Amino acid sequence: MTDHIEDSPIKKKNRGGQPPNSIWEDINKGEAVGSGKFATSCKYCKNTWSHSEVSKLEKHLSNHCPDAPAAVVRRYMTKVMEQQDKSKSSKKRKYSEG
Ligand SMILES: [Zn+2]
Image (cartoon, rainbow, N blue to C red; front, side):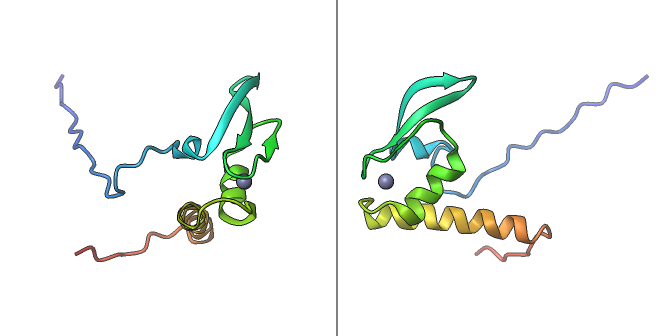
C-alpha cells in the first residue's frame, strides 16, 4: 500500500481582499429571528427586513436603495451582475490576465 500525499496548492484570489460578507458593512444585523437568520436594516435608507436574505440585500443596495452612496451602489451592481453572468453561462470563459 502506498500513502500518497495530496498536493494542496494555495489558491490566490485576485479580488482585492474583501471579505465575502462585506454586505454587513452596509447592512445592520439585528436580532436573530431563526436558525442563522437575522433581522436586518439598511444603514443608508433605514429600510428594514424581518429576515436576512443576502441576495435580496445586495439587490436593494445595487438598485433600490435611495440613499446609498454611488460607490456602494456600483460595488453591488457589479456583484449582482457577476452573479447573473455566472448563472447564465456555466462555461468558463478564458480571460487573459495581464
Ligand atoms: Zn437602503
